[in-house]
Structures are given as structure tokens and as C-alpha cells.
Image 1: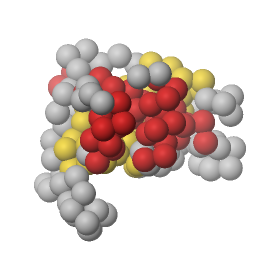
Image 2: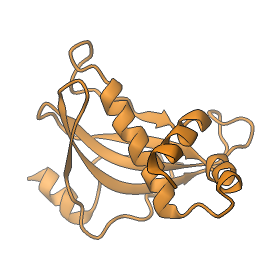
Image 3: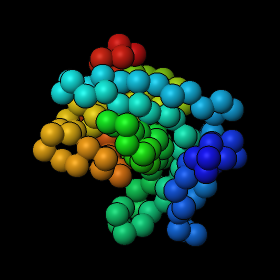
Length: 152
């Protein structure tokens, strides 16, 4: 019942520290989607929104990033928050490469492809199936690979 109330209110069900920015771009209707990973395991995920992250201890060079937040569940376990971090420098570099601005939908596509890669590489048999990594960062190399995959 509590999970139902959290979903009704739009809360992802996880309390964050006071210094964590609130989610933005929260979809009006959360749709649960299914992804069959290369390992054969099936994951359910929901896009919860994004957070703009400023420089901190994890990004000492002053680099900012956008965290795309997904709620992911495997093996009928409880949902866990997984943040896919897209450094702001990546869309800027891709824009230079493409000769045009990178749209927010294209940034979301990069984050979603990284989500799929994380789920593909997550070996449920070797790890606790209920524990999914908390964050993953899109690297510049992955961004270029994803960009080519999307044929943009």
C-alpha cells in the first residue's frame, strides 16, 4: 500500500539528502518498461526524471552533469534508483562533432543506452540480484559509440 501511495504522489520512494537537487522533467504518467538483458535476466524500469548536478567531491574539476534517474527492479525485487550521469561536456562535444545542437531527447537516448549497457553487464548470478549499482557515468567513448548507433 505504501508503494502505491508513493507512486500516486510521484515520489520515487527513496529519501535523499537535503543537498540533493530535486527531480525535474518528471513524466506525467510513469510507464513501467521491460528490458531483457544479454544475460537473459529481465529488468523492469521506470524513468523518474533528471537532476542537474553541480561540481562536488566526485567532480573536483568543476564539471557539471545531468543525472537521468531510473527506478530499476530485477527478479521481482524492490525498485532501486539508478542514476545515469551524462557530463555536460559530452553533448557539447557531440554538437561540435555533428555540427548542430544536441537535443534533450538525444541526451535522454544516450542515458537510456547506458542504462541498457549497465543492465547487460550486470551479472545477477555473481551479485545479489536485488542490488543494482547506484550510478553509472556515460564516458566520452561510449557517447560516441552510442551516437553512431543512433545514426544521428
